[in-house]
Image 1 (cartoon, rainbow, N blue to C red):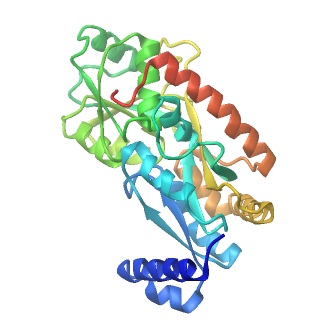
Image 2 (tube, helix red, strand yellow):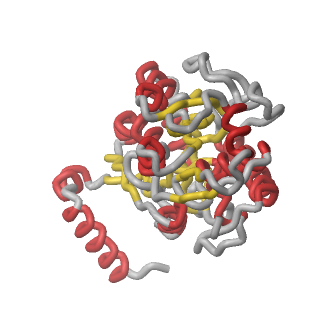
Amino acid sequence: MQTDSSFLDRRQLVMAALLSAGLGKAFAQSGNVSRIIVPFAAGGAREMPARAIQQELSQETGQNWIIESKPGAGGAIGTAFVSKAAPDGKTLLMAASSHFVTSAMGARPFYEPVKEFAPVANIGNQSYVLIVNAGVPAKTAAEFIQYAKSKPGVLNYNSAGVGSSTHLAMAYFAKSADIDMVHVPYKGTGEAVTDVSGGRGHAVIVPTAGVGVYLQDARLRVIGITAKKRASLLPQIPTLAESGLSGFHFESWFGLLAPAGTPVAVLEKLNAAVNKIIVNKEVKERLLALGMDSPQWSLDAFNKVFLADRDLMTKIVKETGITRDS
């Protein structure tokens, strides 16, 4: 049981952190600061869904929700931080299907991906796009596969970190296409794409969030999408299955998790708030701009998807041979 002195110590630490971040005034006014922890670098794909609902979540719950980035170790640092947070519904993790990958790789990430978390609400489901540097002589995924096969072990691909969804998606693609590429991990999606555009990387698979910017960048070429069918917002981009990888698809949910032990009543309140928010016209448009559709999942429905993805991601990790040193 927590003592009064330890509680006060923690309050002092939180206040100090808020003041150092320039948030002391907001805390003093409301006393209701809550956090969504993004376990990757600021500005990346994992942060965007949280930003899309931030304002409405504050309004709907009466809490002042802030978004805080805690990158490192392929998302393990920020994820572990949330696992140890107070189970009061005021510290949530911005998670995705890759939540299970670190554990599936046999690593000890200082958290247990199922036992130490409680699914809260799904914000949106998203597929990914395959991007290559414009200097790569391939205008389609099929051409890229043939080019990569002609240079085994020579080409590299970037990711947002070992075990991230961007790593898993690309490793899965390479395995399915029977090509040998070198993995180069970064701390976030933005950095990974920037180095591909700068010619320091040959390819990257990233969520469809922000794909419009990539399409307008002459240094990049978007050559495929991992969805089962072409996206309505990106009808010009063929699926990887169309490009010769029959049956290939890779998609992810992006949602909120709470520390295990959070009262069901608190989880239900947050779930209801998010489900109400994601059908709001303006929010829905924001999510669609990120390439996301937003099914409303109850706590039970999200939990079932959560557990099913644990099994699926573990299977993919084993099939691709991803390790902490990949």
